[in-house]
Image (tube, rainbow, N blue to C red; front, top):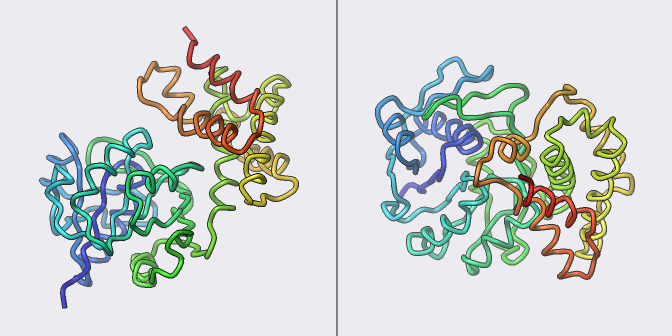
Length: 312
């Protein structure tokens, strides 16, 4: 019997962390074939030294996959593809995956956002996509080296609502064997939107003001802007049949207040360093699009979106 083929596309903070764990276990068990897809300098470094993870969880911090390739087109017959790219590369990656996946390939996106599942399905409509949300504090220290701090990373994974009956037990086995913390739910949308309400509101407001998570919790104007965005997202979720907890706005501020006051957000860092590619569309774009689809007014999100976009 052929071994199942697991492919990790993108070795950034998230893909590198989870890809490392899966591959390190597999180096011992040899149960699967694991391939990494990485570009440029990351490809060169991992080919030469393996993927390195600096983490309180691992003393042996190096792992070598069965194969590392630069192009998705070099992948043959993947059974599971973990997509760990930046969200603005998602469409591009999905288009490249289309010709290499087979009819049973399962896609597991490792990115946070309310519209990730829909965006993958638009390009790859016939395959099983498991809606996920990810909790991990990790980043690229340098090419081929991922640094992880804090609690072990965790994934919340759900069944594909369009392919509910697909057997995905072997995928959850991979996560268990790799000692990855995860919750498997029939429906993961509640968790995905709960996380989205947090990252979108704090991302957008900190980006506009070049402030911190603590400032959004304590400054009157910033708090009211974040509250407005959260309420818009909550209304959209309700219209889409996703029931978030009644006190989600307060709960989100409470969660944010547990972070150190000066904590930045990735959108704020990207916008205020002038980075061209950023998560504006992932956060504001998704709210505006879903709002117009389900008939929810989104003036708070629209105003901040416009202000950041034309910030000079």
